[in-house]
Image (cartoon, rainbow, N blue to C red; front, side, top):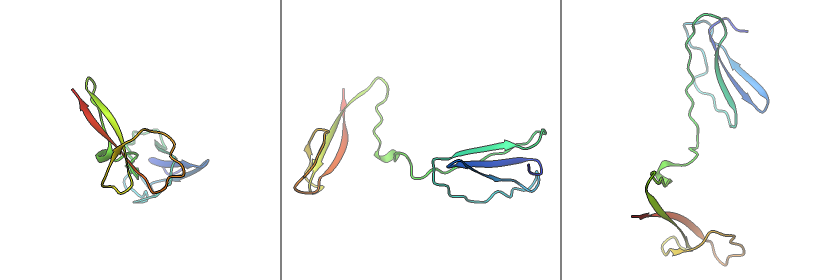
Length: 116
């Protein structure tokens, strides 16, 4: 059960990994653990006294990089344009769909155009 205090538990592929501090005053959790998700992370008290604990997580890679994200605020609008290129210089408007047996590599990008 541990010696009292707080625990951190990680459930990955049905297996639970748990880290306990040696006492209530010294943190002995690993400084860094790398877990390939998906996983469940829990911090919990192991006794009935008031114990504070926290877990800091860094999720990588970001699910969507903010600099490559289009946000359309409520009440505003945008025309979303999909473009295609074979050289990353010249772009033409294209439609979403299935692209098979293409004669050369194709690159796609999506860009917004403000709607007044």
